[in-house]
Image (cartoon, rainbow, N blue to C red; front, top):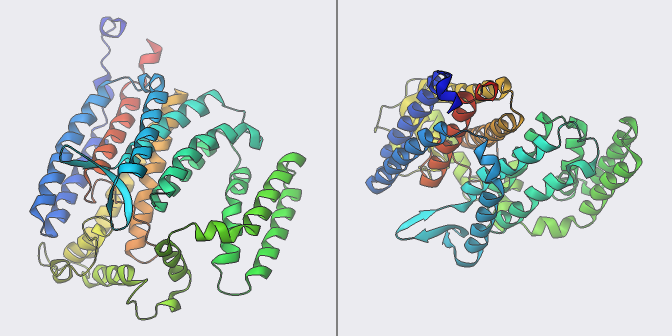
Length: 414
């Protein structure tokens, strides 16, 4: 009531550029989905967009700090849904990621991404300036570990990696040094040194361990932290065979074929999706072939062109100009989210928005990269554009949260 008596209205801070860019991208996504000639998918995407925009305004009106109180409930619910997926989930293309309910399907992993951001924002708000040792960050890492394992088992390596990226960007923003963040990820490099490099894996691993030891010494890490980091690297390499083979066969092949394209020189198997996508992107030229005139799109030349490879549809039909405009709009949207985070005086709101920036930004970069052959295929959607109702709705809810941080940034002063 004090807000209304003061004459203050949060709508004064409504970021129309954030909303307008998100809406333009979503409408572009509808055009791209329509170009794949599946009317049923287009109708579902239109419904998801309408629901997403409604939720965007509903979330924008709410004070973002209310989500701090419900963080544990939302996180617990999302973990429960992940367990349900592993036991009763709907399987598509060998991955058990969906729940069917009353004729609707949704992916709990998208809810997990959002609920984990709430939990981490709350955690980092409480730990500001206290992220110097591995034990300071350990509780946050455990928060990521539980959903990571459940998503990894679906299998959905791409979404599992998204959780890690969210954690690291939020931790860095909260004050953890980059050197310590690197050491947390270094055991993964130890595994890759032994199983992904095509030549002299044992020698590569030995050199890598020596470099890790030297870095720990030169950067003056605490003795206990140094022992833990080096031990993690050593034992992850020692048991790398177990970790590597815990990946699905198609996931291992995607990584190996990306590192060493000679495994599939004719692109008839492991590299088929990527090479066909690159061909479609290049065939659009500068001006494109025209809307609904993309021959490769019309012939269903690229598998999953409505989801993972929707960017190739845009590039073929609208050419370099359309693809460049799409990229510029996506990064402009990310810049608006970044600006909101940088200008927020509330720690929870700041970390919340940074988490959303990591979620959207990583998916944008990886999806476009895999469409042009610069990343392995990991099954991440292009935010606001790829077909997928759950992902689109959650993206709009995330945008609503950023808008809420922007709109309510002055209410603390009243």
